[in-house]
Image (cartoon, rainbow, N blue to C red; front, side, top):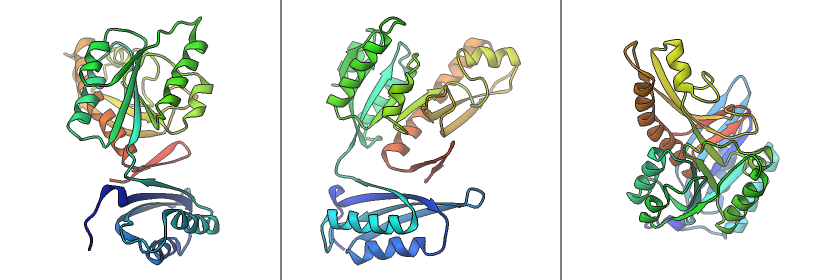
Length: 289
C-alpha cells in the first residue's frame, strides 16, 4: 500500500433516513473509484429513524479525479436522500477565536494549536477588549480589537463579518466571548460557531451560572460546548463534563473548578469539529470517536 499523504486523505459525513443498503452503496462507490477506506463508523437512531456515517478514506490510488468521485457520491446521496459532506484533509480549517477578558480558554487553544493537538489554522482573534493583544501576538496570530456597545453593535458585527470573510474562516470559537451574536450573524455560520457555556446545560442558562449553582447548593457543576443558534444557550450540544463540589465551596471555588473544565471541554469540541467527527440533527449531535 502506498504511503499516506495528508493531501490524499478525505472524510465523508452522511446523514439520511435509515434503510437497507446504505453502507454497501457508499462502500461500492468509493471502491469503484479506487478510494481505500481507512476507517468507518456509523450510527442509527431508531426513534428518529436516521442513519449517520463517517468514512475516512485514501485517494492516492484514485482511478478518476476528485470531481468525478464527488459527483458519484452525489448521485448516491440523491438516491438515498442523503445530506453528505466531503472534507479534504490537505486544507486545514481556518478558525477565528472570539474572546472578551477571560483568557484561560484562549490560552489553552493557542497552546494546543502550537503543540499540534488541533489540526487547524488559527487565523485571527477578535476581542471587544484590548488587554489580550500582547498575549495573542506572542503566538503570531492576528489580533483585532472590535469594541461593542448597544449603540454600535450592528456596525461592529459587519466589521467582524468582513474580517471573517477576508480570512476565509470556517469555524468561529467563542472562548468566553461575553457578547450575544445577532440572529443575522449566526444565520451566516450555521453549525460553525462553537460556544463554551459555564454550566451543564440545560441547567442555569444565561448569565452568572456559577452564582446560580451556588444559590441552589448543587453537588456538581458542569460546562457545555455547543453550537450557537439564534436561541441563547439552546444550540446542539457537542460535549459536556462535570466536577464535584460541596457546601464548603464558595462562588469563587466553583468558578475556579469550572474554568479548568471549560478549557478541556471547549478544546474537545473544537478538535472534534475540525476533524469532521460531528453531525447535527435537530437539537442533537452524533459525535464519532
